[in-house]
Amino acid sequence: MKTEKIIIENLKCHGCANTIRKGLMRIEEVSNVDIDIEESSVKIEYEGKNNMREAFVEKLRKLGYPEEGTGKLNQQIKSYISCAIGRVNK
Image: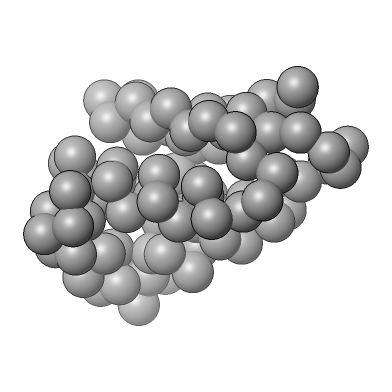
């Protein structure tokens, strides 16, 4: 098993965490996702390919939670929508 820890932007609440967890768990190789809201970090445990970091970073970006230091305004807006959806779909 391999682990990646990624510091992200726009993580505000458990709704955000729910959206992130569901999105990353759709990736076949992912076995577990731990999210630390205070630290704005996502720890992903996975099997298979040696380096999946870029796939994870891309998925997070598409959900509105880019890697720290790479975000843009449109991703921040998208994170608000993802957050709201995550709160509804708990």
